[in-house]
Length: 227
Ligand code: DC
Image (cartoon, rainbow, N blue to C red; front, side, top):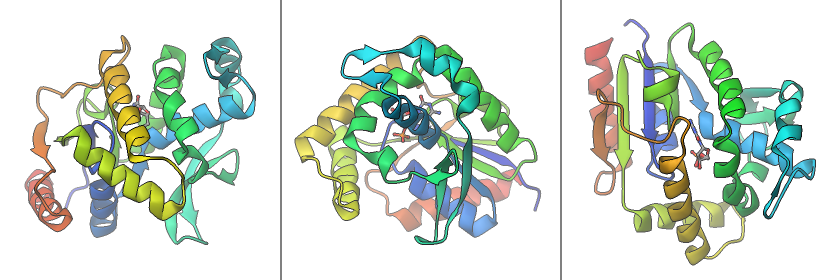
């Protein structure tokens, strides 16, 4: 079967990463979590005290972009893929509420987007990549052979994210998670540069009433048709 690139977009916690990981495992594709890349840049800004409450020293962060090295690799301890920021596995740190609350501001900066998209192109140049995010089907891989746009209500998404965070021991109330999801939906969809929109040739799938396995089966059939 010919390898293709698969773009999965949608708001947060619609099930993009679960689906993308399963596709990657099943077909031996490379999974790239583009949201984790923006989260790492946000964490880097926080660590350097450039981002704190309403204070955001965008210029220092942009100047330091060449010092941010991102890599996806297996975290042997967790037997799961994780992102490494300058050689350090930061999967848990980038999922904190502090990072979640600040990431949309960082992801709205055009210079940062350009740097991330350059890296994402590099990851996808040999095909066989499944990438999830907000602008994958519209900006990163406009020629992806398969584009999916996942949807789901904010309440169900907040419940999923809340349970995920509880399992990981990250503290936050359901209300905080829901409010974060709603505010990110708004910021990510209304920003000037590469807002979250459905590509005209993307297939929209509501994940609310589908089991993970049903969704995977459905998508594997779509991939088989394209390969
Ligand atoms: O998928 P996620 O929730 O981990 O993404 C974190 C943030 O990164 C999200 O609020 C918007 C931003 N993002 C983006 O702007 N473009 C992408 N391709 C992926 C994520």
